[in-house]
Amino acid sequence: MRKNPLDSSRGEVKNAQEKVEQVFEEKGVSRGGEQYLRVPDARDLIEELKEAGCAVVGIGGVELTEEETRPLMDTTADFSKDPEDTWQGYVFDCAWQARAFVDTLPDWDTIYVTLAALSREEWEEYGGPEGQDR
View 1: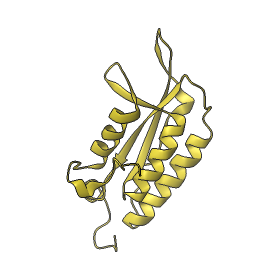
View 2: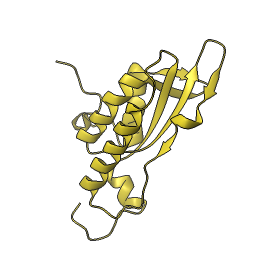
View 3: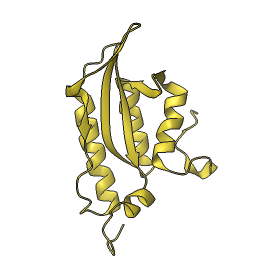
View 4: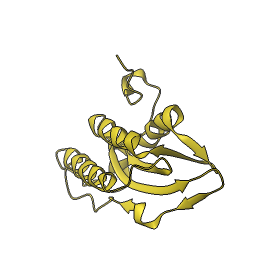
């Protein structure tokens, strides 16, 4: 059985971005201080983050060749809407948008993406609605 790098029960990961970074270390490519995943791996990570209760709030894409890292403006998206929903609703909405966006990207060997994510604690700290059923 494959070990899930997002399993927070191990106590190794403190926030959503650290979870993302752990997966990037295992499957990603590092270039210029940034970590990138191929599109199929990003699809898997979006689902794993959703199951772990983390919201994917942004995606940035690049074309990686041996010579250069070229940002691709049409492969960048921000899903960090105003947090008017419950936490679970926010996670599912962000995951749906992220998955739909990634599904539009070409699955070429040179296209890579990076993901930005929030944990529930980060969401509450940065504007999650007070007093709602989270």
